[in-house]
Length: 480
Ligand code: TRP
Figure (spheres, rainbow, N blue to C red):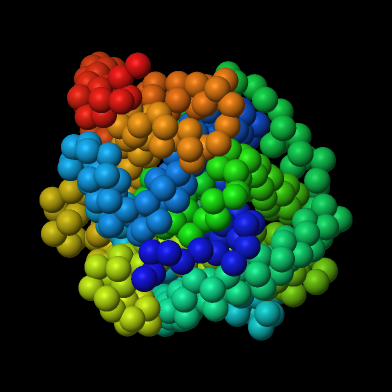
């Protein structure tokens, strides 16, 4: 059966997890959030969260996948039954799969924008264009449902094709080709950025740590970003972990994923901000940094159209290796649960996701205002989907930390982790206490309507509830 499938090599999980982690989060979201939050201080908090929250949860999520050797939904069912814990923990699998489903629906639309910009760049349409023209071209893209739909369809088809070919022929082979290619492109873009732009200003901006610059909101965004960028909390890592070799070390692998992912975000940051500062522009442009500010910088540079095109290919490729990790959890579930063939399971997943993606496509034009969602919630359908996943992602991470920290037996964890006592206790402390506390904090950020004194009150309640739940659900062996 599919549940005994394993990656071809000991290191393939690392490759796949890095492919999942490195995506729009690194190239688009990280630079613009850093830019909006004033640079170094944001990065400091982000790196700190990766270390004390991200890595422990990454270990926990991989562990759940490898210990069950099943897709997240079936894996959680298996783990709760074999460990005699409460059935309620199975929500981890269901929520993860639903979140993956929702994220992919809009991830694909945004990745599609990069397809459009690749074309705009290579065809030279933006060379020498003025800033106004370039800003307007982004507006025109968003205003056109047909164009967005075309790119969304192309991107979803590509993701489905890779996953449909199976974990060896499709995912592994795809990654083995794409990951080195992406790395080379990144290095080319970095060299170009440093040579033609203002690298000194970029490095100063990224590595001057002044914590006073950072707002509370910035702290919270830094934490949220560390989850998103590591692909945590929605079963993607669990699904890949199910195929991980028993010989690979969980700890070393998790640390490598975090280091590579962070290094790539920083390299992308240096490249992008060198170009942006070199063109005398402002870093704090928000989400338009990659699709407006950067093209403006490219437009004036020698070879800018070519390099700009190459850069957007990097964005498409990085997004694709992340998107396949979002297709996998649900596709694998359909194969396991209903015995569908992989191509059929993948087509169902991608087809439904494509349909849901229409909500995002129309949110930028036909439904950009005045729909019932605006009347009811003051947001476009896309904003609602994004809001939902912003809740599900940290919540999934929280539950994974609590389940691995409190409900699994010590023997099971030690057996999987294969590590010394000191590190085991450190990890356990982090997933039992530190990660849940931090996640509860991030979680509350996604409830902007709750303000003032209500936030601390709700935070305390949530943390208490989480710990109580953790203790109640803990297995007997676990009570030390
Ligand atoms: N980590 C990816 C990025 O940085 C996005 C992503 C892929 C993701 N799979 C995920 C985010 C699973 C959360 C969960 O672009």
